[in-house]
Each structure stands twice: as C-alpha cells, then as structure tokens.
Amino acid sequence: MLNFDLGYARGDFRLSANATIGSGVTGICGPSGSGKSTLLLLIAGLLSPSSGTIKAGDEVLVDMEQRKIVPAWERHFGLVFQDGQLFPHLTVRSNLLYGFERIASHMRRLDLQAVAELLEITHLLDRRPALLSGGERQRVALGRALLYSPRLLLLDEPLSSLDERLKQQILPFLKRIKEETHVPMLYVTHARAEVEYLADQVMTMDRGNLQPAP
Ligand SMILES: Nc1ncnc2c1ncn2[C@@H]1O[C@H](COP(=O)(O)OP(=O)(O)OP(=O)(O)O)[C@@H](O)[C@H]1O
Image (tube, rainbow, N blue to C red; front, side, top):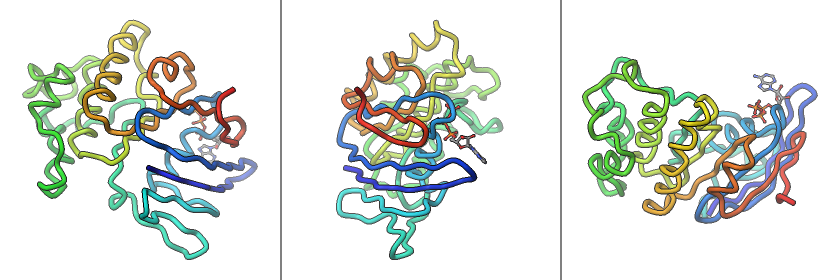
C-alpha cells in the first residue's frame, strides 16, 4: 500500500495530492497540464516535492520535514511512459531482462517466458525495437517493467502514442497484467474510458489538486 501527502511548486504551478493507493489499478485522469505526470514523477522519485511524505507500507520513502528522500532506484517501482523508451541497441529479450538482471533472485516474482507469453511477444524476442510496431513496443515496455517485479507499476499515458485500433488491442493486455500478476498499478491518463475499463479506484487531477472522482 502506498500513501502520499505531497506539495510541489514550480513557477505558477502548485500541486497538492493526498491519497492511499491499494491493490489493483488506481486511475488518475485529468486534462493536459493538470499535473498528472508531475505527480507520477514525484512518486517515482524523479522529482523532489516541496513538502510532504510518501510511505510504502511501513517504509518511509519521503519525509521532507526529516529531509529524507529515498532515491528512485531504491523505491522498487516500475515505470512505463507514453513511448516505451526501449533501448534501441538491445534486442527485445535483452530489453526485457534489463531490470530482471538488476534485482536479487529472491525478489523475482515473474520470469521471462511467463511475461513473454502473457504479452504475446515470444516471437519477437530476437528483434530490435526499430523493427517493432508501436503496439508491440508498448507490450515490450510493459514486460520490461513487470520483470523488474515492482511493488507498484507507474503508467503515464502508456497508450496515448497509439492509434485507436492499437489502444483497443493493448487495453486487454493491461487487464490481463492486473488479473494475472496482481502488481498494483497507478495509471495516469486524460482518457476517462481507459481508467473506467481498468481501474478499481478513480481519482481526478484538476489544476494540481488530486480528488476522488465524482
Ligand atoms: N519541465 C517543466 N518546467 C516548467 N514547467 C513544467 C515542466 N513540465 C511541466 N510543467 C508545467 O507543470 C504543470 C503540470 O504539468 P504536467 O506535465 O504534470 O501535466 P499533465 O497533466 O501530465 O499534462 P499532459 O497530460 O499534457 O502530460 C503544467 O502547467 C506544465 O506546463
């Protein structure tokens, strides 16, 4: 379980977000510029808040009063952005194994074969990203994040670079990840329909304020 109560300021933009993320999928939707990506970067540890706390269960990841900030690589969260950001010089297999090989074996909860089958990318393992379609690339990015066995998967508009047909193809894979791996997910998007399809809990971001969805 993740619990955060954060304040952040940058120029005229102010963010204030307080929530508890349980198991399953938590969706956050809101218009462009409302602060969704900023919140995800704060949780991931790629931005530092001005004030507040983040706790994962009993573990304190951020406590600004104590000047405590656990760095991103020690938080053990998986991240998938809009355009998968695969390593272009590595094959799909090596991309998938990137995080897997960087965690201790006792922390690994999924293996390459299971994830490749789940996402139907087994036939692509020896290809390089340049020879993949957009939808295949996003499935590999999801697989790479899952093989890191994250305690939380942070997804920032993972479908927004895909056309409508591909979105409809990938959404069931996200549902499959939710149902078969039980990795909790925080899913940020401007597309309400995506969170309604996937999420157990929905919140909205409006001009930097996070609120329960109406
Ligand atoms: N690097 C930056 N420097 C200064 N301001 C920024 C920077 N990145 C974002 N902002 C501003 O911070 C605010 C929140 O942006 P953020 O990207 O978090 O919104 P968002 O809801 O994710 O939008 P989008 O859906 O368009 O990605 C916006 O006002 C934006 O203009």
